[in-house]
Image (cartoon, rainbow, N blue to C red; front, side):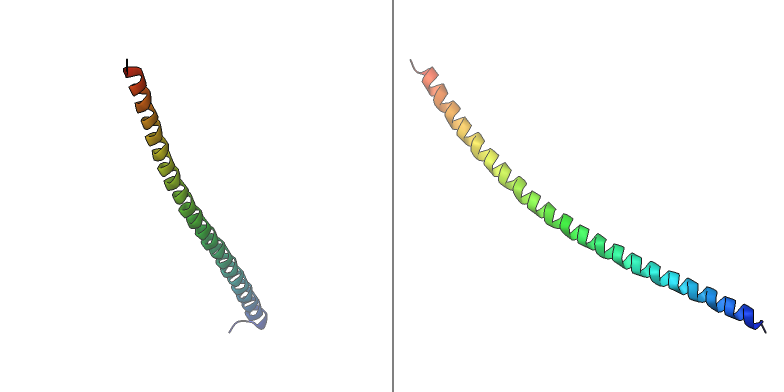
Length: 81
């Protein structure tokens, strides 16, 4: 049988290791929550930017069509005697 002092030291050591494990789990949960929050924000920003890109592409197509129409009119003017 172990001496009483040794058993108490072993118990203290075990308590310390358990305390450290609890702190680690708490820290990891906090980091996970922060990472999930960051990922949600990134997804929202990605969706917002995707919409903006689509709007800009549509606008670019409209501008291109208008410019082509204007160039067509200029060609008609310069082609007429």
